[in-house]
Image (cartoon, rainbow, N blue to C red; front, side, top):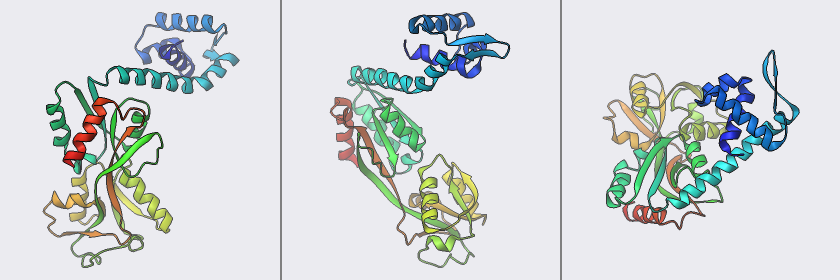
Length: 290
C-alpha cells in the first residue's frame, strides 16, 4: 500500500465512480479498477460494492477512508523528507508568503542563486499559512512568513518589518491627525488586502479584541489598488508603511496606529534540517545581507 493506492481509493470513495475517479487522477478506468482490486487483496477486505447509485463503500471502506487522510499525509511527509535529505546539496526550495517580497527584495534570493550555481534554486509565493504547511510537510526547505510563528519544530527569526498605517484621503476628518486608533474606524468604509494575506486576518482579529466592527467595503490582492481606491475616496485603506514609498501620495496621508500595529517578515526552517548545508548557506547569506 502506498500513497498512490490510497489516493485512488479516496477518489473512488468521494466520486462513487471508478470512471470519474480515474478522470480526476488522469489514469484509465481499467488501471483504477486494478488498483482497487489489489488494495482489497492486500488488506483482505472488501472496500466497495456496486449499486444503482454507484460505488458504495462497505463498512471496511468507510473505516479506511476515515483514517486514510492521516496515513497519506504521514507517508507524504516521509517521502518528502527522504527526498529533501537526498537533495540537500543540490536544491533549495523557498516559499514566500504573499506580500513578503515587498520588504524582502527578490534580488536577495536571486543573487544567492547566482552565488551558488551548484544549487537548483526554486522559489514561489503562497498564502502565509500554506508556506507554514509546506515547511512542516518538507515540501520546501526555507520559508518567509508574515507574523510570529510559535511552531516548536521550526526555528524562526525576524528578518525585517515595518509599521501598519491607515491611508487617509484629503478632506476626510482624520486627514489632519498625526495618528489614529482602531476605535476611530468604527463605521468607516475600509479597504483591506484580501484573505490570502496575513494582514487581513491580523487586522480583523485585533478589531474583534478591541470590540470594533470593521466596515470592509473592498478587498484586493494588489497594494496599488488600495492606494487608488483610497485616493478616489472610496474608503480608508489599511496597509504596510512600505506602500508609501511606491506611490506619490498626492492627497493621501499614511497615519500610524496608536496600537503600534506592525507587519513583520520572519525566516523559518525546520530544526531537524537547519544543519543541512543548503539551509545553512542561505541562512548565513541572509544574515550578511539583511
